[in-house]
Image (tube, rainbow, N blue to C red; front, side, top):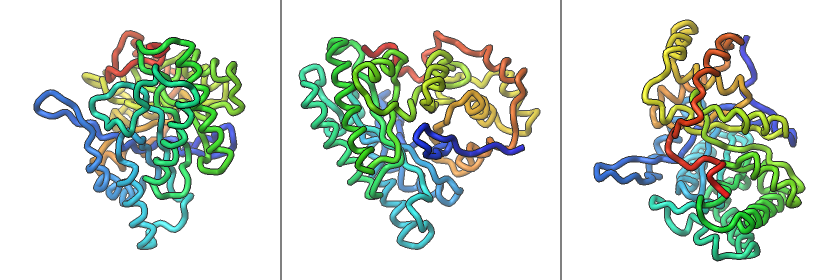
Length: 320
């Protein structure tokens, strides 16, 4: 039987389980990687034509403006009629050093700033994000990273996180975000938010997860706390799809990506995917008309590799 295409956040808001990402990271011939936000115009147009209605962006991606403009064109033509027709998530407070990013999209030199300065900067970033999108509100706004690995003291980074989180709580209460969350937060980071006075538990935690990077402890902690884990890079880092996934794809007349996404969803994840190909946009969301058995889930559980580096990003536990 088909299963629900949404998951309910702990504040009662229903969030799509599958969402299209817009962080276009492209490798160039010189070995460098760059963001290419201009890809977003055509990507979002194709996605809307394919029936996709949920999108993930971030201030650092520089795709918010393009996303908002394409959506605005659809509203102008009457192809969309209600703001609730689409789901938009975005992210601020990227405090990692990043050669791909413009300085204006980052929290620079956080180790030299007070918590009060961080709060002012985060509030400005939320407002910039809202203005870029031009959509009135975001469905969920998240803090992008807990810290820059290896920089700042644990105490300072911790004080910055609660300062940034308090800013999101304020925008949430004022109605500019239907939900708020975090990205790349470890169990320790989540516990510290509560210990440091957060009055709202994050609704979601966006983390790297796949059939090989299953994040079992973090996933189960989030679920126990009512926090929805959302998996990004669910396919990135795999040199080839494991045999069991390919076998299940044949059994269910699906492709391997659909099996991987279905596995994550059945373990309680929401899933992000990134593509500019219309066929993939259509097939990646077709994961609600079949169900993996307990035995099949256990077989994929056996693929977990705690040593896998995935995309090569820092792990949540790498951040103080």
